[in-house]
Length: 202
Image (cartoon, rainbow, N blue to C red; front, side, top):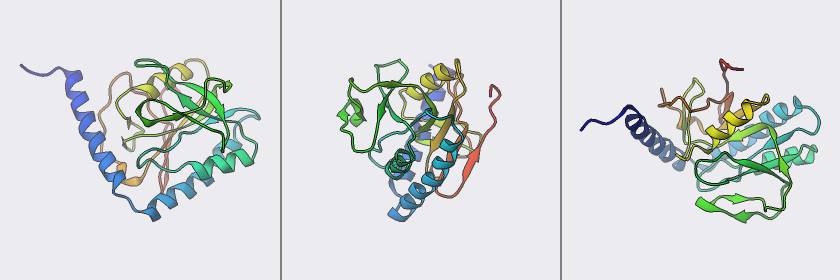
């Protein structure tokens, strides 16, 4: 029995995901520090272009993900509202709740830490997005749940948002597999460069 096109893409994504995560896991502290520092510079620049009061979505690092704590501190000090993604269940888009550095977070599924249900809802204009692998066309392979793809599709249907992937250069691949439901990134920040893409529906 031959596999379907969707099964082939899923298998290819799994391979790309494993390779990207393995590359990320093996990086040294100096490389990680360089990305954290570049994120502060790029994050300040991007946030400064937003209207006053517009929120920025970050993520709390787990396992070998990049450290966004310095960026969170810098944006909070500048008075920029921050929020974090909150999962609503399998097959659903993320929602976002307000958060500030130092505020307690609840443990959710998959080891993710999220704001409590009492935190106010927010709609970010700028999202910093985690990923497992990427290519230089702005395609992203995530962790397999499709949460950010559904979320970006929902947000982009009603407003202009900027989706910025956060990754190490070692996670780049010549071409990552994509499906019709995959949402491309507007830009990617690594420890060595900032890649900017033009989307057809921008």
